Every structure is written in C-alpha cells, then in structure tokens.
Length: 315
Length: 290
Image (cartoon, one colour):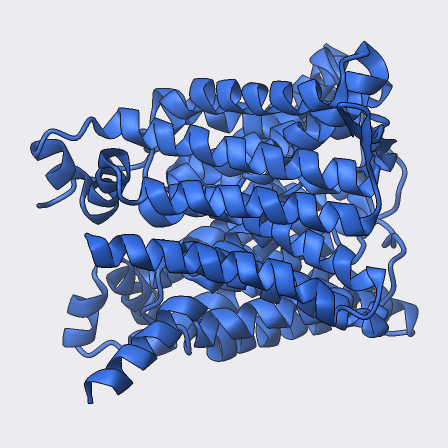
C-alpha cells in the first residue's frame, strides 16, 4: 500500500515538475498554446479513460459532452447573462444530467451496440449545436466571453498554460485516487467480467453509470476550458471526428493508464501541429498516424513501454 | 397521396443506398468481426472515380467499371496493409484503425481529386416521370434496380456457390472453417473486396441524384452502420431492411416533421430501437458464457 501511494505521488510529482519546467525551455508563446491544448485534451482523455480503461465501456460520442461544456460557457454569458465561471459549472452539471439520463438505457448495451448508441448520442448533440444557429451561431461557431475570476481577467496563452496545467493536475490526482477506492475497484471488476462482478455483489448498472457521468464531467470541463482559452467555439469540437480523436488518445496512450492518456494527448495534439507545414496533407497524415500507431502500439504506448522495461529488469 | 408517394420513392431510393452500405458492413463483419468505418469511403470512390474518369473522356460504362476496380483494389489493400497486420487486436483498436483509414482515404481523395461537389448525368435522362402525381427521377429506378440486382447476386453467391458457402462457414465459426480446410485469410480478403465493390456500385448509382465530393463517406458510413445495427449486426436481410427503413424514416421525417433535422432521425430512431430491443430488430440474443 505504501509503495502504491508512493507511485501515485511520484506520478503527480513528475507531472507537476514537467508542467513547471517546460516554460523555461519554450521559445515562444506558440509553444504555450500548444501545451495548453495538450493539457485540455489530456484532461478529457483521462475522464474517458475512466469509462473505457477502468470500467471497460466504449464511447464513440464523447465529444458531445466536450461540446456541451464549450457551448455552455459561450451561450450562458452571451445570451443569458450568466457569469462565465457559473456557466462552466452549469455546463458540467448539464453534461452530468444528460449522461445520467441517457446512460441508464444505453449502458445496458454491449460491444458494437454500445458503440453505435454513444455514436448516435454524439451525432445528435452535434446536429443540435450546428442547427440551432440562433443560439449557437450554427456551423460558423460563436465567440466566447473571457473568463473573469474575482475581477481577474484570465487571458493570454501564458496564463492559460498555468490554468489548464492546474486543471490537468487536479484531474490526474482524482483519477489516480479513484483507482484505489472501492468505486475504482468495482470499475476494474466490471472491466474484467461483468458476470463475475455481479456475482460478487457489484451493482453493475450503477457503477457503469457512475463511470459515464464522471467521464462526461471531465469532458465538459475540458470543453469549457478550451472555449475560454480560444475565445471562440465551433461545432467541430462536438463532432464525430473529435470523439474519434479522444478515443484514439485513450487507446494510443494505453487503456486504463492515466499517464498513458497524457502521453497519448502529447502525441496526437503535437504531431499535427508539427506537421502544419504540410497543410494540404493534414488529413492524410492524421489518418496515417492513427493507422500506423494502432497497428504497432495496439496495447498503447505506456503499457507497451513499461512492459518492455519490466521484462528488461527481470532478465 | 402524390406527396406521400413522392416521399415513399425518395425514401426507398436513399434507403437502397444505405442498404448497400449496410450490406458491405455486414459482409466484412461476418467474415472478420471487424466493423469497417471506411465503408463510406468506397461509396465516395465509386462516385468520384467515375466522375473524373468520364470527365477525362472515358465512356460512362467503362468509367464505372474502372471505379469499381479502383475501390476493390483499395479494399484489398486496406485488408492486407491495415487489418491483417493488426490481427488479434481488440475490437476498439480495429474500429480506430478503420476510422483512421477512412480519414486517410479522404485526405488522399482531397489531394488527387479536389474539394468540389461533382455530378454525373442521369443514366437515362433527367426528365422526371409522373407516377400518380409524384415526379420521380429516372435515376431512382436505376438505384432501386441496381440495389436489387446486387442483393440477389450476393444471395446467389452466398447460397449457391462453393466459395459463398466458405464465406458463410467463416462467418459462422472461423476456427471450424479453418479446420475443414477453408483459407479464412483469403475469405476475409474476398469480403473486403466484395464490400468495396458493393460500396462503389452504390456510389456510382446515387451520384446523379445526390452529388458526390471527397467527404461524403463519413455520414454514409455512420448511417450504414446505424442501418446494419437497426437490422441486427451480422444479418444480411436485416441490413437491407434496416437500410430501407432508415431511408423511409428520413424521407417521411424530413417531409412531414422537420427538414433541418433530417440527419437526426436516423440516430434518434436507432437510440429508441436499442432502448427497446438491445439486439436490433433481427439480431440474435447473445448469451454470455461464464
């Protein structure tokens, strides 16, 4: 138990040091922006990983919750006069309620049926967002008011680097701790075998629903953070491709590995940025990266690498 | 009445295309257990290659043939280069691979072709035919007839040829099929090639009505998947019925309820069906063995 606690503490400490040290090596504000994008994606992916990696349920529509969080902070202040910070909380609450209501019937489904149901949910939310243009600006998107906290106007890529970094730390801390709670253990039990979990008294339906709601709240908060940071939001953030991107980050980094989700986000967010000079070939390269990395890293980067180290250490 | 008939025919026309996409899904799923999200890209390739080949002066029939061949080659490459090397990976990983492949194909299409919308002329003119007051494009009959021919041909192939029976055997039990001497790798390649051909034919038939561009594949793949699920994954009859049903729902939904939410009906219905019948309309109940 002491060793586990240490390992958890170590992971957090390393992450905190990385976040604190990176600014010393960043040559321009562009790097702060890209890093913030990585932190935001990592936060959403960590949440999704609780659902996929820990509880073993797939979601191909998770960008819906990301979109709800993003549009909550866009619509709340602009149309309803709600303070931006409150809009973030309302977005998270809306995502949680939607996940709870839809999750109840959806999570009874298994395998490909669960995949299509979550996909359908994602497409529906994205459709509503791009159609209700009176509220959302339609396919063109809409501007987002800057976040103000106690009179402090949060803006600039430097500031947002720290805010998103702090959010990621908190998200990581919660996910790491969750793994060691009775809830986290119940998630793992469902992942390994639903029937066995049920036999030993795990309320399967309740825990699946919990994982879904937690994952939705993570995505929603990440979405709000991105909307504030960019000052602008469009329906792509809620779309199918973004859902795929999130799932890819989780699987690429390693199912069930919190560190993996961060590593996956680093790879999938920075690679396209590094390749922007080939703008024409953007989709081609993204597709190629996804296919190749999934074939050769099918267990995920972090589990593959740590497996390699363990084998080395033993021999 | 005329209005109802109009919606009915346009629904069946679109539904026939969904049915063909769903059939492609089913064929690959049965042979390999892979849900191929690049299925919509075959439809795109069918339309785009035909458009560009016929623009280059190739006669329409030959252009269509070239398009089917191109799609089949791409389908075989997809199997050989992306699916075969990832054998044994989890279902989610395989889904992500095919989605990645679909993004890749779209990227290549955007570069080789362009990002514009393209149209083919109707095979037998564009003058609408009047049927009890409903104006029907002649191309609708080509789509419906073509889809029917494909479905019948596939049925005859599966039920009355040795190779087709090998496909069915592989779908029923891969290990047992291998034990009786069926080369399941060849069967899987066949399934990918066949699905690609079916997708391409759908693309060629429907392009005169709906136009085509490099990115039409995504929504078609999603709806084809929904149709296959609606009918019950792995059931070819279910795929065809699911596709037609989805097309009708969309046409009547758009006609009588709201045309802005046309694309939403498919997914709303699939959610409701799954709530009520978690295995789709024609799917078998799967019991988990412990």
